[in-house]
Length: 113
Image (tube, rainbow, N blue to C red; front, side, top):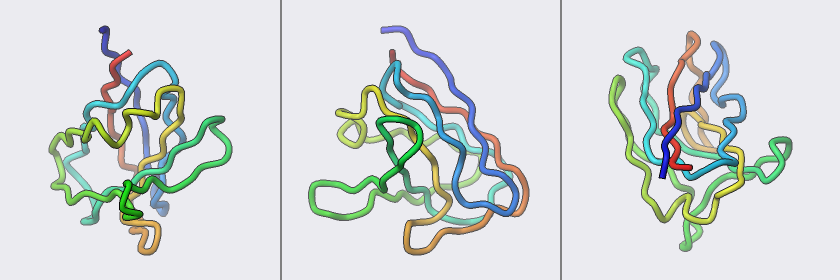
């Protein structure tokens, strides 16, 4: 299957990115910026790009991963296996503890279409 990149940004003073259009495929990798205010990553999904919900696993635990700046995060295929056709937001921190980024943080997501 072809793969495409979509770009996203968490704006300065925010903890949540603008919606990323993943309607054409399933997220595979997330390329993080070298500059990053220390935090975990968590996610929100939406079927319409307007209303978003936090992403949880089957055990009712929010999906949040520890990351290092300037690295690539490989998504667990199980997380987004049924997310084809969804919009995704990337969060710095968790739903209970968002972490504000001090400057704009640009990243890229690789999607398998």
